[in-house]
Length: 417
Image (cartoon, rainbow, N blue to C red; front, top):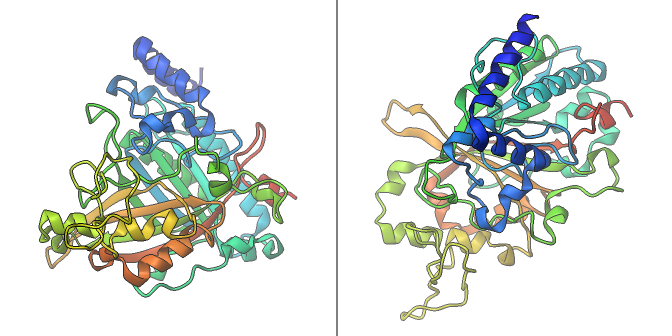
């Protein structure tokens, strides 16, 4: 028996030890496919379908499928975002070999197994809902001689007046999103991806994020951001009849290799928490347009109640202010523009001035960013009350191809066409 076999056996023994409840969680995760879409039903929308704590480690997500994992997969409690640039002299051949290595490693790790020459970081853990998602930046196509196959949807995002972007932490040839419900499992995957890059690619930037842990609340709930606001209520749901049309690229398009894929907009949004926390509660709620306690609209109801945008208060003014974040970003205010937001919070320490470097690693998914992210952000840029309390510090746009079929690696239909 090899060392790798011993590592695999150790992890399998752990999975067996979680008992019947854990086994049920594993079956449910596998049956849901790459997206575990059943866990994003109307009953658990935005909450991640959090399992009981005893099942957290046992849940696995499939690597192969129509779509890559990590898009409709329920939010995990830990995440890493990392961008790479191809090394000088590396081209299409080296990129294909790299994606082949990355895909093989991701498949093994997502199944809760240990790859060859494993570090042992996650030796005692199950798969913990690990997902590893891969995307291509605009510059990737120039570096690999594939400029003719670059989608028009990867045209640079327009400049926004509130941007304060650091180019060193923006864009990149390749992008990897890692999520897991265990911090060591997530770091293990990050380390494996970095090692697999070898001489073919170099890290351009890397960011770490977190969400509330599965099982931390009495029942599944929509996540809160670091401002304390319920965040993600208006997300489109896989049960919506137009979900696939809005989020995933259809077959038969100009770039068939993107069929089943999606476009990810990534923004590092710093929250000016000291300024925000000075606002009294009623002012905070008017900035957002929702109650802080439960995420319900200021016009009444529950979290999932539709915004009554025409409702006026006793003073004759809209109950949800004209510049409230929820009003301006509402799909009905933006020609139906919609995107699937799947963010992580971040905290990268406290600066010399005593202010926290904290906020949101905003990741949103759409079939076309020009119809999803851009129109909404343009409108927010012109008059969102929340803009005074946030700063966009980094940005990236990536083409994330569809999921690989059995025997394929991610991006094979692009790189080997």
